[in-house]
Every structure is written in structure tokens, then in C-alpha cells.
Length: 155
Image: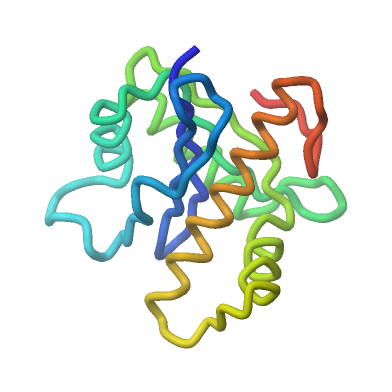
């Protein structure tokens, strides 16, 4: 089957989550990518391509921020455009989109339920990673036929 990488695309930070080789377990490894901290001249898609190569990823799932009414706004259009760049950078590795509605809200709720406050700017990267974990868990549940938080069809 192979590893699946979830990408929670953001203007500042990009949360990442990775499945195991059997696409059953999900972890927040590798860490969130801070777009401002990328090496000079390195694109986001090149940074993700490096992660894909390093972890031998077989598929990428890119979170698509669908509006609550089901429409695709400006944020979704940015993700779709980025998805095209990512597909080109990854060669033959499939890149699918997945409805990510409420994953960031769910991540913040999980942190609050665990008593982990968002106290520092660097903590926001942890929310992005957790959102990517939730995104990937939902996608894997859908693939197994068990539904998910939001059952959008992947591209």
C-alpha cells in the first residue's frame, strides 16, 4: 500500500501528517513546515517533495478548504493551484484533495480537552500538525469504507 502524507496547506504554516506503510496508523511526523523558514530559494512544493522522497510516500492528500455551504472560495482556489504545482514536483506520486472542513477547529478542541493551551506562536504549528492528523485519519477511514468526518470525494 505505502505511506500517505497529509498536507494541511496554510499561508504561513503547512501541517503534515504521515501514515505508516500499511496506511493504518497516523502520526504528526514530519514536523510542520514554516514557509518563512524554508531555505532561501526553496519552494514549498520542493520542500514537500523532499519529505515524500525521504519517507517513501506513495500518495499525498491535500486538504481542500471547502466553505461550509459546500462552495469553493478563494482559499480553495489557492489550494487547487498549489496542488497542480505539487503534482508537477512529485512526478508520478498521486496528489488527491480532501475536504478539510473543521479540521483546525477539531484540532483546537482536542488541545483544549487535553488541557493544552495555545500560549505561544510556535504552538500554532502543533495545531496545524494535529489538523493534518485529523485530515489523514478521516481520509483513511473513508478509504476503509468507514466514512469520515466529512465524506467528500477525493480528486
